[in-house]
Length: 142
Image (tube, rainbow, N blue to C red; front, side, top):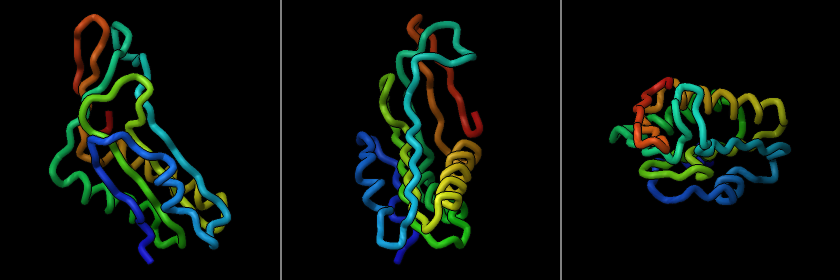
């Protein structure tokens, strides 16, 4: 039994149902999820955001698996997580996380720890594209 069922960096659209299905089991009394989507604004942007372009380091997928393992932290449960790369439009899913555990508190805790670690540690950079044609790059932690 592998606790990290999915840990993927992909240019393909993310399948939320596949992530939820990967962590559902007879022992899971709770399944939590997080979907990070591209929004049309950013507090630091002077103009509306029209899209994002993500690029990943070649080691990003291995790093994502490690981060997922660490977020689970020996708890019994399953994790499925993916981050998209390439060009995304407003409304597209950039990150999908699903966590299945016996109890809700653990599921919420693992999900929260995982997204926070992704923001801090995953070697993925995004270029924010604004309606006025300007762009801004944001890296790990940003």
